[in-house]
Length: 276
Image 1 (tube, rainbow, N blue to C red):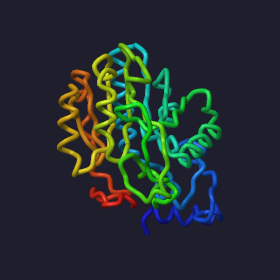
Image 2: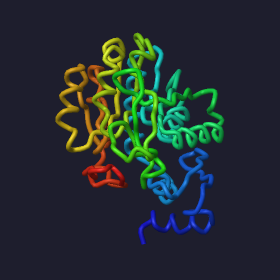
Image 3: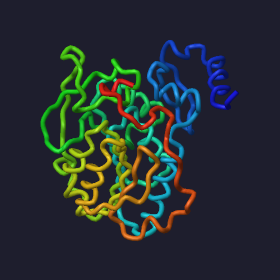
Image 4: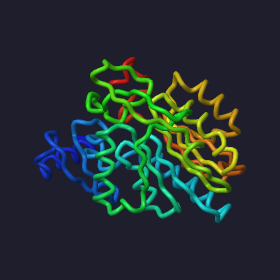
């Protein structure tokens, strides 16, 4: 029996509420309120971790970047879901400021619970906004309708009664960072082009490191945008790509900092209705 399956069985014995309602679990040194009906939550409950290789790679990039410059550093968790990346980066103590963006009402409520449970409410700023290229409003499916609540976003269609209106904003309109290390995890379900266009000034004025989710059918267009913004792709752990405008950052990484394609949830294809 695979180790992850055995852990899952043990967790079911230890946590009788597994699969029926929310419960608090200790994962990666964090206290997390999770609901097993959502696929990401369930995988975290069963395996006791999430995106270990991606997190390790991003932390390595941040540490190398901070060695090169002792200026201020900001982490942006764009498409935060319940804030795992924001909480992890707070635990690493690498940033002067951490900001999490999550537009979905249910996900935002779960994000607030995690901040409370981990005494992080005063250290992680939260914005209930969809990061985009314009300031205004948009529509997106309610995450509660999806097997994976992390796959709801702008541009995904759903019946009118199943959608909600959310605020949108460009990063350049929200913040005026200068001479700062800006690190962003961008997971916005196909809306990454708008996010990048809305942070052009941020990229041009700062030292930037991105971890950005890009699926196969989005790759060509997304890479063109990154190149046009002066960002060089320095590796990928599919579907996550790492890009930076910091010269000489990638060669300092050990070869084993890379990892095979991620397959915890997806096989790389995108279902037409993004409901998986």
